[in-house]
Image: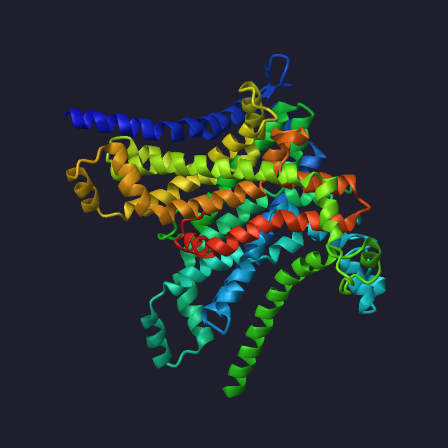
Length: 291
Length: 276
């Protein structure tokens, strides 16, 4: 009997720190964001309840509209460009060509390095005067294509968006792992029936890894909603707020002590994230898919 | 038929090589640029540096106080990793090995945290850290980083602990282990792989974190390396090559970590356990 109480004390002691941290950094903040989003508050004077006014102000706000548009484009681009490319490369590596393990390692590389380092590197690549991209265009005789990539109204957002989409290592590793867990007997049976490797991929592999693809699409879209560093460092949201995203806008509102709108933006982000998860789950209708 | 197969092979090699070049070339160029003079960099961006300017690295260390930034980052990341490993493996132990009424509810609540976009929680984190009187301290970042990856770590470590057979624990009980001895002497050593996997992810994400480092600190004494290279860029815009050197220095620990724990990282992702 004494033993059980001793174990109970131990269990409570062991759970307590995690629960405290979780409450302080997840439960309380999420509630706080939602509640304060209905208030007008500068962080110092006493907050006043304003109902939905923060939200209606946001929806009439040009920068908010651009930000949400950019985030949605980003989320869709990740889901429709990055994930399919990751699937393609995973299927190719699953055939175990020479050096596939090394390739897997290298493709993952950009996900180990900080977003700051990668972004600053790309800042140097896009740089107007001494950038690598313009230098390359000059080198191959296409100097009329030279461009102020991050300063041009039309090119700024695509430039900020596009380079990350081609870093496919993260999803590729997850998908590759799932492919290698598919039982070989399916493929043997299919080859006896005369199916080519490509046909096998299309009719056997892809349907069987649907759950993992759904996971990757969710992660990719949520990632598109969370973008921040790329924009902050490359353009700061400019030119003319054309590259703004929700997290950057939230950060700016916080710095201006507009805590009400900042939290309304936070709530929008949380809701969008939840919607993405529900939608993808519905679309893929995957029983195996557990998030 | 044969031509088709050959064509397919060529195409697949072309795709794989394209991604290889895309991934590697910018990084190699970065290292190369960090060894050039600023004049060389302006000239032909593709030429090899002749001779290599290791002085850029010295400059980077001097002008950006990299030693301070580096040690701040090491201290913050290692502390957050250690704290996170301890707190989460304790919680995972109880949730995995003890069946009690609220256990499943607590666990599923904890792991929904994986899906919460923590960048949406900037305002509460900011006010919380201020209220605790921790603004502009290393402890603010250590606590935040520990907490932010807590759900993911609990999830990974509990997964490993779940696969430990119950007999081992019964044997430990017969040998007279109490609750704490059982945890530290039996469970932790066996779950080492899981704990190391979670810790690797934790270290990398703390080392690379930027948003909260920017939001919760301001003075140079507590600045992290990621913040440092950003300031470096805005302060010394003419000295591009030293900036590149600073960036190279900032990625060395991540690359070293990845090289050592590569299999951990890949198998961690492989078990489908990384979903955040």
